[in-house]
Image (cartoon, rainbow, N blue to C red; front, side, top):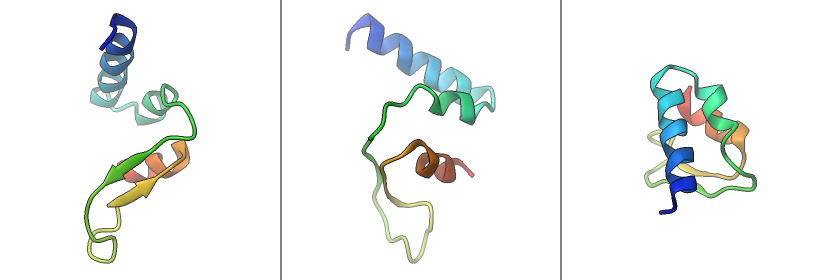
Length: 60
């Protein structure tokens, strides 16, 4: 991991930790590949997401 990548990851989690999910999502490039394994019929926030908007739904 480069220092640049590390700083972005730290900023992402810092914003999430501060309750600023919308600001954290600004750091994600699109298209993206966000995958949380599991049955979406049982747990709706599981599954694949490819946009910031879809990832925002993950945090709601």
